[in-house]
Length: 186
Figure 1 (tube, helix red, strand yellow):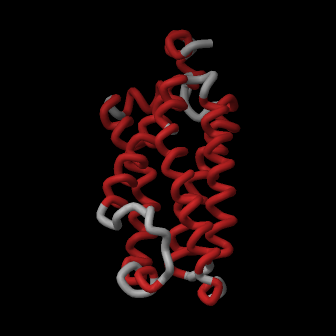
Figure 2 (cartoon, one colour):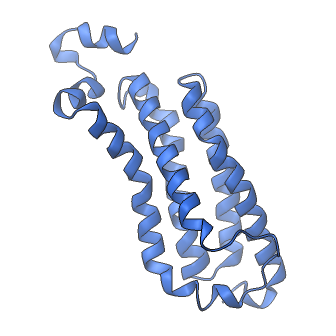
């Protein structure tokens, strides 16, 4: 059943997306979905912001790491893209229906893993756990892309830059873990 046929059904059986559409305009729904990923990212940054100029700058890092000023721009773009992609999937599934359990379960899991990486790496200074976290994150994002592809190809494609960035971030996390043996458990 597509979204339009859900709208024509019995009023008692309206999908959550149709109910939300009657409460909020589409632009507000898109803005909400696009904003959600930023919440955890901002919270992680806020908790660990003092660690970048102190602890992080003292780590051995590879020469190919991206400049620090680039990081907020990249994450703003990636979080907005993944949020909009989640809106497309939500819309095409008619809301948080039983069909959405796996696609949004994977999406929610990757968001939690994404949001926890910063406090684990920068806050707890647990390089080993940060490496495990980012590898699990990568696998979960791949699963999200695969589960979203049959629902909305554009939504899956919007996550490709995120996967590319996670490839770089995973390699960087590994190199920092490998090159800082004295800092692995501190």
